[in-house]
Image (tube, rainbow, N blue to C red):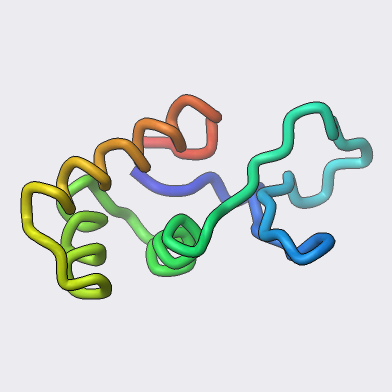
Length: 89
């Protein structure tokens, strides 16, 4: 899977939010804000193919956490991206 190219992270009012690049209008009723961990993962996989295992490995290396916890958190993060329509196969 891969993050769709039209989505970019921008800093707005001190928050990192996902926007659709080149959109002439924005639906500000649904803003996707990224916390520190989500932003780290986004930047690490942006423009690349990845899977849950890739994300789990990134979490393990960055935070030094257990494999099971990393896979659980990675799956949740990927599920949220899918739910928001931000990734493609």
